[in-house]
Length: 86
Image (cartoon, rainbow, N blue to C red):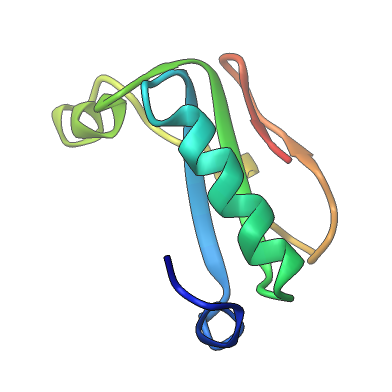
């Protein structure tokens, strides 16, 4: 596991987690670790999402609306289709 001094050098991070993903909890722990070390995190959680869902984006089945794009740091954004930026 990386030491805090290494984590603190990470750039601002975008993190996507999905409710039905086996790695969901790991993603949440990673988010907390980044935040605890002062790394700015933009987090998107898909309540109805599953592992690998982003592979469907290229097929046109799934699209992230512009409402997911953060407009100001530290503000929560709500999206459509059960997704939230927290």
